[in-house]
Image (cartoon, rainbow, N blue to C red; front, side, top):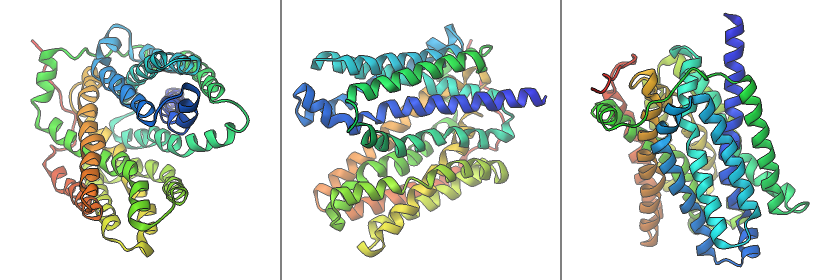
Length: 394
């Protein structure tokens, strides 16, 4: 029993490492973008479109990941994703024209999207349900660490080597991590379910599914949504320089490495629903305070807001894993996350930007905080925390 527990922990640590490389491989391209523009002679618009292309590949891959994991298994799918991410990074590094670079970004999105549904299904199988909060909390350290280290890696290495070589280093690291997981990782007995129409209809017919889609949208709004517009807000509304705003927003993410894990511990101790409700209420409050605060206090809310916001995802993923059977968990993730991201990571930031254009940036952030905080009431409509089974499609 102890040996199985150690093996599960090793697999979780390896998955966290793979998730870090998966996430870092995508966001490190942002600080490298000026060098890409210069080498490929691109406009800002053409370079910025790379991330839209990558996002399209990511969402398509998320939606179709069940077809891959059902034919292979979750372990092989995770390994395939890491290898494909590494190869795609190498392709971007070798690209000498706009078309090949676009292809590389699209393939990078496709490769990265395969990972998350299989990883969530694997973690859910490795640990008992009463330990899911801690497990997902550890796993969620990866994106927070990537947000911190990607700019630092770029700042440290760019004076020494080219951006191509930085991508090749990530490529080599990713291939090595895939090999280690192939040897030591677990999950080869787990197969995903393809997103067949009957299965999707059964999952999407559950009220809890749609409630969690909305709650995830609120959680994503509080993290990626606010993160994407915060530097602009600090510069335009509070008179900071771009450097000051970037440093403040970046350094404020340091403490999220601790609180992401704390969110999982609290979920296991007090329950997923109670933790989610508290986190959304506090995150919404601090987000609204960003909009209402005077310049003298805005730095305080910039530090507090992400510390609270990242606590949402460990209990949220634990709740999402309770929808459907073990075989359909990957389908739940592949359906819910794209829908949530479109709202929380796309439409809400776009709406904030539009209100800002009309001179209502402070109001936009305040309303965003109210939207997030309202999730504390919506959580109460979730069913009791018990494993729910979806009837097999006929």
